[in-house]
Amino acid sequence: MAEIVRPADIEKRSFEIIGELLGERRLDPENEAVIKRAIHTTADFEYADSLVFSEHAVERGIEALRAGCDIVTDTQMARAGINKAVLARLGGEVRCFMSDEDVAAEAKKRGVTRAAVSMEKAAKLEKPCVFAIGNAPTALLRLKELMDEGRLTPALIIGVPVGFVNVIESKEKIIEGCKAPYIVARGRKGGSNVAAAICNALLYKIAEGRAESSVVKDGKKLRTGYTTGSCAAAAAKAAAMLLLDGRRSESVSVTTPGGRTLELKTEDLRLEGGRAFCAVRKDSGDDPDVTDGALICAEVGRSEEPGVFIDGGKGIGRVTKPGLDQPVGAAAINSAPRRQIEDNLRQLLERSDWEGGLTVVISAPEGEELAQKTFNPRLGIVGGISILGTTGIVDPMSEQALTETIRITLRQKRGLGEGYALLTPGNIGAEYVKSGLGLDPAAPVSVSNYIGESIDMCRGLGFKGVLIAGHIGKLVKLAGGIMNTHSRYGDCRMEILASCAAAEGLSAGSCAKILDCAVCDDALRIIDGEGLLEKSMKRLEERVGLALKRRAGEMPAGALIFSGRYGLLCSSGDAEELLKIFREVR
Image (tube, rainbow, N blue to C red):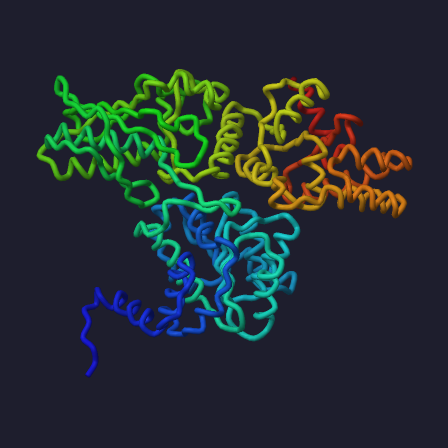
């Protein structure tokens, strides 16, 4: 007799059966949810063995989705199967370019598949993406080529195409030589349904709060924290509960923009003169944030006008320059935290007898002092810190936090009418801009290792051109298509210099010595010793120019590469023309 199960319990019972049939088999706890959902979707237990995960791929995928990544698929079927509601709450969307007219026309013109052209179109997107490939091995192959060319850095690759032609080969290329995190189904099995299932497994871990409150960075498990935005929302909610219902609690639950529920401790919860007050202490986890331990306070009062009205008080900065998230004159409480505060307080208002609205003033007693240790003064935010957080969660050593700072700075410069962007990796490049080029030291934007992403941002913001000035120790990597110059993504400095010099006739013995060098200036000394420095740097100049052209597209881009010992070494791409423009507006 068939088992009678209520519709709501069918999925739960299915996973129980999967666990029973797996028997004594023990799955990696990090990957277990993905494997079981693939089995649930296909009723095929071979996925317990065929799914291959790069190190901490699941955690990195969750981290990317929490940060608002989009998902790019190679079929409309996969797009339809992914839970778009959960993804939207995280700030992402599902994209599939297979039916786009421009993709079809380009594929026909070149005699290639639409799947391959779709990946090229995806490579032009400004924001990072998770790629879920369930049907076309040509999409996976083109994805790998774009990565090798330095045109794309996926947040995660889900490679599960199904079929016979190039299916196995495309998957093995990802497994054997991919620097991006990946989840791949080895062999011929897979499909759009499996790609969607894996995406959903990650999304459900986030939505249901099953993801660990930690992330793995460089092999270390680090504790996550919560943003100033989550602190402000929690303090405001606790104060509003006291004001509206007389409820007083030592902790309060608050929903983040990413859909998670946090339970935060309250401090100094009190009612005075018809207004309620509460504070929440910021916990940045293992992230070295200057606001860690600071009190974020909320003062909540009643308003006769319906709605939630938010402003900043003591220690919260005010915007004085255009181009930032908030208009000039507004408190530096960004859009996502504002929505987070509003959403949590509207839920209280809907359940209360009060027919009016609420006024909320967010403050930070130490904010003005802490702001001096941030980018706020440079961005034109005066008087205190900003209330930030797109997901509500602090990711330790977050790349997103750094790139968002770069984006804000570039957006502000564009808002002030600047048409060209000057970028430097850091202080050495900034000093060269001032002393070596004679330009305004405030002109460059410090982009750290994120050269490629910063170029993408400049394109997206409508800059007319971008000039990069930096030390050869960083920018030499551009010649190899390495657009994130951190050593974890590749360190081919000596190989690139040796190959450029070898092409100009450097002796084999000298090439071998270069490969043993620790710093670029030592390698340059060896090349200069055989009189080939100028010719070798011309080679380097050409390679960097090509890499920049691939990344920047139609936008003019150039690089000025220097060394402390030898000065300016090369001017790649459109560097000379762009430098003239910057000197004209100096």
